[in-house]
Length: 359
Ligand SMILES: *Cc1c(COP(=O)(O)O)cnc(C)c1O
Image 1: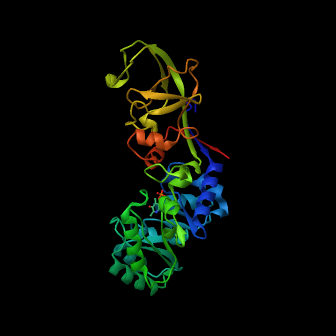
Image 2: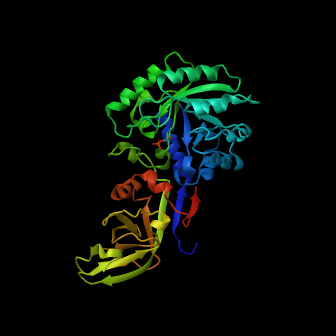
Image 3: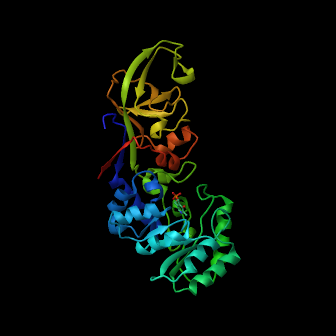
C-alpha cells in the first residue's frame, strides 16, 4: 500500500526460535501457541512455515482453529480454552480438534451426547492462577468421568503458571508442588510450561511445553535475561517519514504541546499512529530507527502519525524508512517505554498495516 506502513514477518526467524525452543524442551513435545492470529503475526503463514516440524498448535477460539484447517494445516490443534458452548461440538469433531476441559460445564457438554470419535482432552488443574481449571478434588472426579467415557481418548493433564516470567518467584515452586500432588497417580502426558518456564525451569518441562512469545522473538521475562540474545525478532514494524521540518527553541510539537523543543530541532513526521497499533502511551524519548539510525519519539502519539526528534540525522528525508520495533530495535524496549508488554504490542497491530512475509 502507498502509505508503506508495514509489518515485515521473517519466517526464517520464526523457525529459528522454534528450533531454539526445541533445544530447551529436550525431549518434550511443543505445542506451538499461535492464538490471537499468531500473536498478531498471521497464524496461517506461521503454521505453514513450520510444516511437520510442529508437534501441535494452540489457539483460543474455534474460528482460529477452523481457519488453520481451511488453510490445509493437518497437525493437531488444541482449543486452549476449550468449547464456549455445546454448539461447537460438531465443528470440533469435523476438524479433529483437541479440547481443553477446564470446568464442569465443559465436562458436561463433552459427555452429553455420544460422539463418533474419541477426542483428545487436556484436563486443566487450577494450581493457583485462579483463572481456569478444576480444584484438586474436582480434577480427580473429572478425570474419572472422562476416563469412563467413549467420547474421550488420551487425557493430558495441564496447568498454567502465574509468575514464571519472574525467575525465582516462590509461587512458581508452589504451583509445581500443587500440580504434582494434583496429578499424582493419574495416567497421561502432563504440561505446565509457557515460554518463561520452558527457558528458566527445567523441572517444569515435562511431556509437552507450550511456548508462545519466545517463538515471536521476544523475551518472556519481565527483567533482563540472556535468552534475549538467542531469539530473533519475527516482526519488524516500519513506516516512512512523510514530513520533515525545523522548529525553533520553545515550540511545542503535537497535541497538547506536551513536548517543547529545548533547542532548535528537526522534526520528522511518520505515517503510523495508535490507529495502526503503535502504543498511544509510548513516552517521549521512546526509541525509533530512521534509516537505521537512532531517533526518539517526541510529542503525543496521534491516530495516524507520530513525531520524532531527528536533529541528529541531518540527512533524513521524506520517504526514508522508520523502524518502530523489530530488527535493530527490540520490541521489549518499546513495550517498556509504553508501560506495556510485547504481547500487547504484537496483538494490537491494526488492520491498516500491510503484512509482508519473508523467508
Ligand atoms: C498463551 C498461553 C501460553 C503461551 O504463553 P507465552 O508466555 O506466550 O509463552 C501457554 N499456555 C497457555 C495456557 C496460554 O494461554
